[in-house]
Length: 293
Image (cartoon, rainbow, N blue to C red; front, side, top):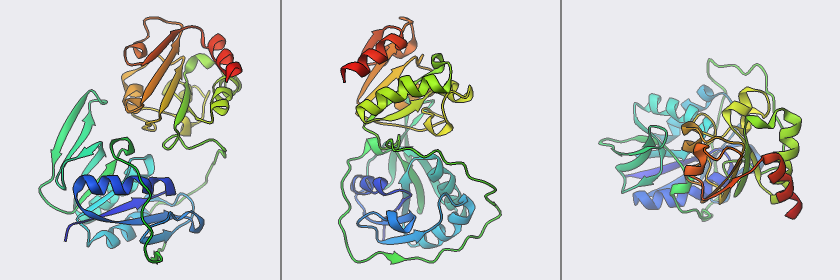
């Protein structure tokens, strides 16, 4: 029987399960992978695992549990792509990444060439492993059922975690944030970035993003990077300050409902994609915006 197993690595991701399953026309189960305290309502099964376990130690038990399903899906993220690719290898299954829409159980659309083209992919056999972008599917709470089945999990794999460096923050995760304020390399240093970009984001109750150039130069932390090589985001409001608008960055924000660009260069490429553009120095515009919120 065809059925979707939707793998969830943090609770908010479960909201995409219903929309994706509806698009495929299939029934679905939710499998939560994470801490005991974070299990979402409606999860049918759980793997209680330590924070950020190695991908190869997760892939084998996930694959074993997924063998009775025709589709294994997860929200697109750095973690899911790492884990799900290994699951596909173990199952000898086809894999489709960054799905933005589905037309039944075998036909999917995904962006290619940094989002400049949309490819239609048809899968001819099952199982199939997928990662999906939440913006392409309706969200809704998963209906609660019987108590979640506790699945046994043992840390087996060749990868060993040597150390972990966590930047704690009360700001919303970029993948779930409804408002994101992003800064680029003109912010000069980490202190300025936090004051100008972080200050406005906190006033708006939003998340903080950064370009790859800002991350590479040490201005912003790695987890803030937005773009093709960072996080794919789809907020209601995306404010880009001092961001030129490279193809790689735009590929990560193209699903934003409203894009606001603030740049003192009137010829910056981002103005071609922005819904609202302001030609101004970000060091003047953002503090003024913050003062008026």
